[in-house]
Image (cartoon, rainbow, N blue to C red; front, top):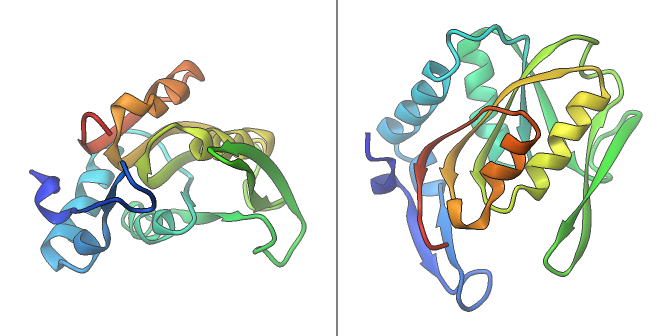
Length: 175
């Protein structure tokens, strides 16, 4: 399935020299969205999964749909300060500073098998921070799945070096 046909390329966003890979066109296309969710689910039908964790914001949309299809719960991984209960936080580096993601302290029971979902893996900073939160909470990451991999930025390798199995539905070289 060529998922690239559903993804809009926006040159020069958020800055010159970058091509933004926009999945809102995939999400708004009923056939594309269903095929993406079905493919993400099929990649993990043989693994035992207790929870799906999705990274804010597009990972919520995809992760929620995957969790529903797998018949398991969903854990939102949010930007710092967005969750209303007690949280744990993990910082990660951005090109121009530091950001953080958080989860509720009680969102992942000890020993839970967790599937991590997001729309895109680039440098791996956010995904690595999310993986750290899951592990610190007592969960075990069975895999991480993305719609898009930007292999030249090395994010897949960052996760694989942590022992995490990574899948992506499509890749864009040179970005």
